[in-house]
Picture 1 (cartoon, rainbow, N blue to C red):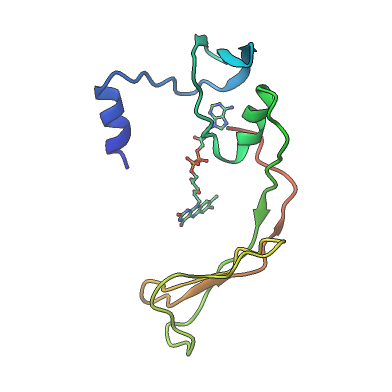
Picture 2: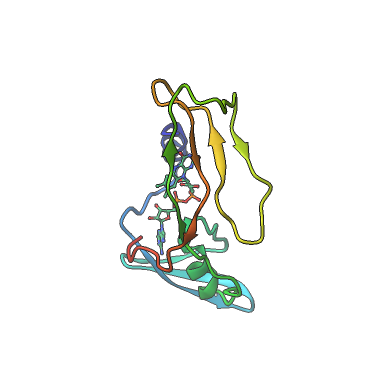
Length: 128
Ligand SMILES: Cc1cc2nc3c(=O)[nH]c(=O)nc-3n(C[C@H](O)[C@H](O)[C@H](O)COP(=O)(O)OP(=O)(O)OC[C@H]3O[C@@H](n4cnc5c(N)ncnc54)[C@H](O)[C@@H]3O)c2cc1C
């Protein structure tokens, strides 16, 4: 994964680390500038890839009609001798209320692990 940013850097990408995006201006439905805690940038395009906070960025350009709701749940490490072995990751068909149910082969000596009772945690960490 480290090769991607290195390659981007070699091709002229400038990284503004520790610059939080705090605002975006638009004109005629098009992106004009991005305000960060460090500097203001002029741009024609934005890729919204801020993970759990993508709804905040969407809202800055008037597209905030969705909200990310954080969920958390436990992982259980099963004994390696359990009778319910799987050879690859098994995911449940998604339900209306996501439970993050998953079974996966673990690395020895841990055996399998599974999770299945994710619940809304109602907050996101207040940092980026
Ligand atoms: C505890 C945990 C365990 C996980 N384990 C696994 C696993 O084993 N396998 C797996 O495949 N996935 C796992 N995931 C999920 C995986 O981490 C995510 O799916 C993946 O990181 C999402 O990548 P992303 O680039 O979309 O977002 P992120 O990795 O979240 O990157 C978003 C970036 O945007 C930055 N950012 C946010 N807001 C702003 C802003 N306003 N201005 C500037 N920058 C901002 C953040 O600082 C962050 O660097 C796990 C997640 C968690 C929380």
